[in-house]
Amino acid sequence: MKLTRRQLATLLASSTALAQAPPPVPATPGEELKNARDRAKANGEALARLAIPMATEPAFQFKA
Image 1 (cartoon, helix red, strand yellow):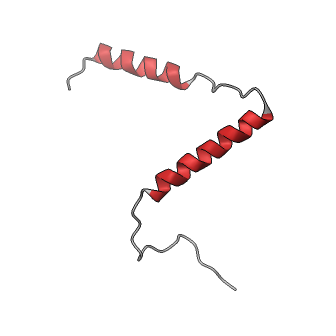
Image 2 (cartoon, one colour; image 1 turned 45 degrees about the vertical axis):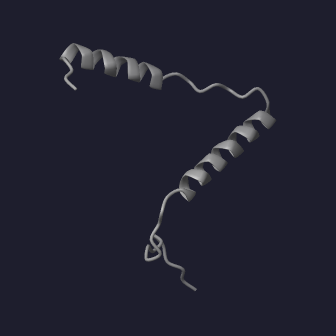
């Protein structure tokens, strides 16, 4: 894909404008809780799809 400098500048300007838009504010605390649970469930499902080898060690150690 070939882009000119002007096309690249336009693309970057539009993407930064979208990134600066604030997220919608939930109307109620219950709605905020539901959104948080939905995000946690989606993250859990995404992690469950990843294949992790049994030989993988955690990045921490248990010490007694």
